[in-house]
Length: 517
Image (cartoon, rainbow, N blue to C red; front, side):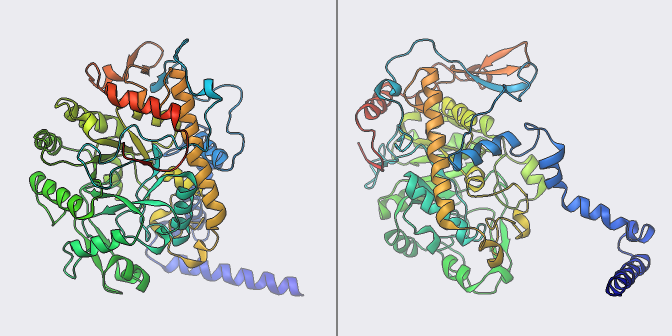
């Protein structure tokens, strides 16, 4: 009897759905195929998951393939991250694949001293802010650091996990443009990012407030300031934070009214050209003593040419340049911007680097790369092109549990990372995920050291643009230098810097941020 009642109720419910489908006018599919049409929408909803686990091959999926995600997951969990039975990549025919050229003989490397310790810091070859004499210049302890991801874009639990992971691994953690939140204060050293809305250091009208910036820097472990001009996911585009999402917590952190829409302009108001931008950079550096740099995706080159020309005079300049690739992006962006605006990392970075190299400035500032560089082979290519450090974002998210569900823009991230839903965020345990983030960061440094040793050098910054070749199927190969038009010596450290980092690795293998030298 009970089963019959349940069956009757279910049939009645289906009949109601079918009736509604027949009379509604919004979906032609449902009107023509009541009930059955819902299966199409269900399949569309779970399409990414079906492709991840059933349809695509190990190397086919984007933005991160199954093999790439597996490597990150295994590395973060301290599991075996090796792969058996050869490569899944079609190395005989694939175009654009990078190969490092190992050396048969090399000078004494780290393994001669007992092997690379994954706990060691692998410091930057350059002192951040040193060339311009910043009061608080320092040598970053790690060439791998956590990229800009704001609280608001990520949950408080996720930011906490990443910051604690940064502290454990001895890396820097970029706050993102959403302001410095309590979740960023869990032991990790910070790079404070300032975006066009000046969150955390703004006046009521949205203009920049220097006093608030100085107060914020004084009360937190901020080691450098990054002015965000644009990012790879949506360059040249502002944003709107709906008032419904401006909670009391978000409002307090960002310095905006509770419950009111907040627009981020597409460009800065504190400066309007390269000349005034450099004045702004020097003002921040003088008032805080910190190294100050810029972050940008790469589009037209006039900006970079003017910046390098003005810096060549020697009186003003940025301390670092973070180049973001157009393939980057951790959150929401219009499809056209994600797909078709700004250059991919390798092409964009090589053009920027060449602009400074033409003027002999590459040893005078630190180059930071971001945009899917948290994989060893991509990172090695970046270092060969002249990067001094890399920032990782989506890879760090994967290390703390992201499953690439691609729901970042919906606030329904199933793993509690890219959401402000308290119910979803509760599933993420910051303590255990912090350990995984730290292990991933250390493992990536260890892999970079292994790749460097294979090439015959002691540090990834010593890999050059002639040490890697790009294959075009099985009939042509060209060095990175040839592909991107590098001249002799481009992509390589100057003799003094190369000697310094080699000596430092041999004599100071400890952890922690190194003082300026």
